Image (tube, rainbow, N blue to C red; front, side, top):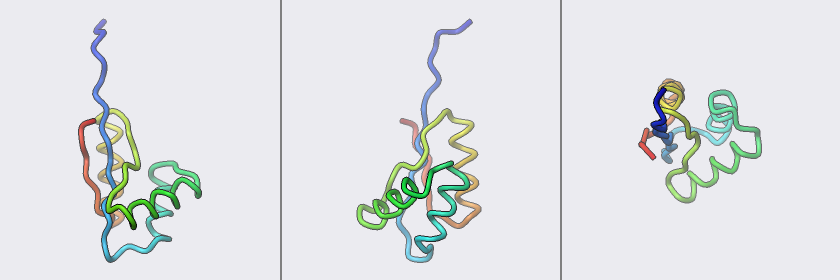
Length: 81
């Protein structure tokens, strides 16, 4: 049995000019399992700061979320934490 800890990955949502707040909030709720308040806060942070970490997990889960958000048309990055 390995005692090595698994690395964590961040899915970062990037501000863009084509997605509405409603679409972003819907995607964060459905894909990242955010509640309405969390999704709204992330949408506002992205709008004002340019980016926001919306999901943190192991590489496989973070990669899956990253791909699903991209399919929905969101601008995202995947970064090792």
